[in-house]
Amino acid sequence: MIELIAAEKIYRRGSEELHALKGIDLDIGKGEFISIVGPSGAGKSSLLHILGCLDKPTKGTMKVDGVNVAHLSEKKLDEVRRKKIGFVFQQFYLMPGLSVFENVSLPMIFNKQNTDKKKIAELIRMVGLKDRSDHLPNQLSGGEMQRVAIARALVNNPEIVLADEPTGNLDSENSQKIFELLKSLHGIGYTIVMVTHNKDLASRADKCISIKDGRIL
Amino acid sequence: MIFLKLALKNLKRHRTRSLLALLGIATSVAVLFSILSFNKGFEEGLSRELERTGIHFMVVPSGCSHEVASLVLHGSIIPKFIDLSVMDKITAMNGIEFASPILVAQLPNTEKERVDLVYGIEMSRVRQLKPHWQLDGSVPKDDQEIILGSEIAGHLGLNPGDTLSYPNANSTFKVAAVIKKTGSQDDAFIYIPVKTAQRIFKKPSGATAIGVKVRDAAALTTITDQLSEKVPGIQIVTMNQVMNSISTLAASAKVLSLSIAIIAIIVSAVGVMNAMLMAVFERTQEIGMLRAIGASRFDIFRIILLEGMLLTISGGFAGIIVSVAGNDIIEIFVRKVMPYVPAGNMTHFDSGIAVVSLIFALFVGILSGLYPAWHASKVNPIEAIKG
Image (cartoon, rainbow over all chains, first blue to last red; front, side, top):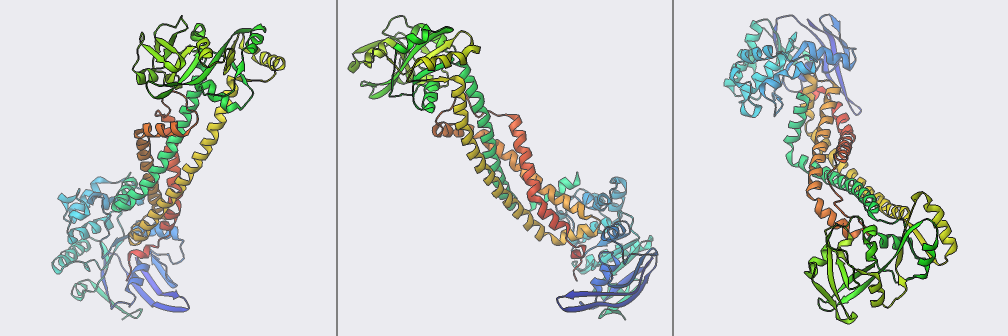
């Protein structure tokens, strides 16, 4: 469903060239649960940017549902991202001042859809925050905030959920719970890619990819 | 709707900064609103006041027309006199309904240790010269009877029937009437029969001015042209000229004050722009996240622009409220600094001007929000995931 073929990413910093990804081949099939591990600076973030259609590879091909997106305009890429990709971030990134419900509804609004209240409520229930729909982010614990972020990532029915260190800001107990939640989403058919430092959690995914110096080991 | 909420919440997150920027906008909109309101009130008051004077033109000794304008409207003292022989020539002309002398001077009041303003007027013509007066008492019939303006009556503590004496002018007057408050300078004068004034001031055939009413206002120009040909050494000031003369003065004051308001608005707009830019810089990651979860550049642009508009429009509202609340202070101030201000309340609330001021505030919001919004829309979504 997402396919990277000989993808390279080169950043230019002044006259210096930084080869962040050096020919990555990766095929993510529907319903897979993949974890990506690697030391910092290995190219995890660059890979995630490209998988998430936040950035384009400098060389190579990146296909989403068979369509090469490596040469799409920014606007088209926005659309692919909006429709097919759900993001979960390390810092949760909920909008302060907006309720749980409103935070979850944001991607729907950006997708110019009417907010489907039933669906949003259902997602909030699914992540275990049924009674917190009207709470503001500052009334929630870290684990709860990440649950909201996961519900938000699912609201546009994405093909794939990309989680960037989803447990990086959580204690081990909450990390476990968030991992269990992702695992249960996988259980009901979602495709999940998780970047993590936590080797224990990474090893419990279907497939664990190690990356170092811009290459898959 | 959620964008509006988002913008509002964003402003609330930087409460102090938003408030300071809002204060700047509020101040400048208050200034703008006050100037526009005052100007409208001034123009309305001016034409209202001119309609009230029961004469078509004034004949005065040649001199400065602004001086004359101020004489016509509130009776200033001009140290030049016109001889009453001119009056006979005027009344001899065709088409004149009446001509009436006015003698304005100061009279020391030794008892109260003040100088009173005395306005010599033909009592038989009071109803025609000052049609808007409402008298408490009756029009004087005798040459020792006077009318008091409400303000001076209050100062001197006099009511109809009381007496007022000026020992050094050898005169004792009986108060025949007190004028109900007009809100104009009429309130400050002591109106005495013009003959008595001429005697006291030892100008038996002198007048400060002669007020003239013609039978047919359409023939006004013909009459004034003929008159200035026939009688040398006089100046004719029509009410239109007075109006123009004051309007010109007011217009230059308006230009000056509006430029100050515009500078204030520019400064506050820069303040808003600065506050918004800082907010955008601080929220780079968050904006990146919004882009990542599907917001288009235009969505981001809209949210930030909306913040600017919200900020300035609420500043505009605050400014108008402050301006309305501070109306009286502004009016007192303007009455002090302006050479002539018509009677009545100048700075009443005008919804049209309020709307114009708010639209202006909104426009300032859009202008000062454009750059920050554009900047925010350029934020790369990869900012959300920095490894």
